[in-house]
Image 1: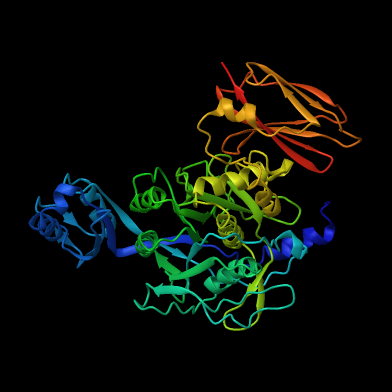
Image 2: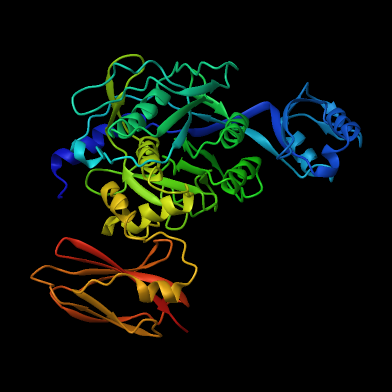
Length: 503
């Protein structure tokens, strides 16, 4: 599609509105997170000595992950070694210097800014993706501002109704996660619309209210919610937000709980962020989206011209997927329909699709879901080197990839590559190969043929456009030893041919 003057004007007008996302604004003035070693946890007297030394009280502590939230009772205070502590930053630094404490960090606060309606020139079909559900049960948890009564907030072509869900309110400490902001209801409605399509209903939702009526939420609350999600058997965690921080965050308490989720096979889908920055540059990046965990899918936003949204963060190595995130229709707070934009909305679409794809897996796997999206993404020049997929998500093709064996765990790659069911119209030899493979296409017709080399995780390595040629020699000398596959698109068909690269 060609961008028109009208679309450019719409983009300019859109820039006058606030984008839907969480941004870091501050940290708590008196609360901080600590991680304690096993030796310290095993000694209640030592823990109390540390609390006294930090003039602090303990708000909560998770014995399994050994993470807790402490509160300084007053400033200034004097430590046992005579150091005068005057603010929360000094208190955290003092904690980090203690051998009895593994780590300490500020309790960062994220805020959802007020959002306004933003009409889009996109067709509904650009994000109106409906897929049938399978027979396996999948549970999604939405960490956000809660949910209001959106049972009547639907219109022709959409079904935002969500009448059955579990939940918890961490702001008011009760089991009624009532939304008094609006962001959470919009996100929940987008997901509900995707899962409501199927006659099979095997996706359930859990609403975790982690942010208050001002859209403010502390990282400590997110940590508690993630721990509860994992312990309650959630499969997908929707985090339509991020915390902006600088430097290496791999030892932070939030990273610890994401590691815990990964160990239990829980998929975390998170916003790349709305600061128009490169998350590959860790001087400033969005977390948890930028963590290196395999169970995280980091999502960027594109417009309906398949271009990165002007507000979206990006990253060739740290942002996995891109999908439309502008002018996404969803329920307003209490009544009505509103269009909103941001990586938050893009995340919600991916979460809904992930849950539906997961109902078709015999065993839910974050790695398989991630591979399905990346391997089936539509290549876009504007997104090459911008996100790992080098293109944008195509939900229907991700669904088709379920049945192609593209994202399976291969124990014997040589046997798998030789025994895959052959397509008589496409040939490839030799297999295994050292430096070159040859591809023959019998029915190339008059259409252009596109060939891509992908690794077994679905990441695009090389793309070749062959024009009308029916035979092609492909250089694979740059590949490391291992299993790969050729993706061949011709005459509106997609073939996947696995092969083994030998040194």
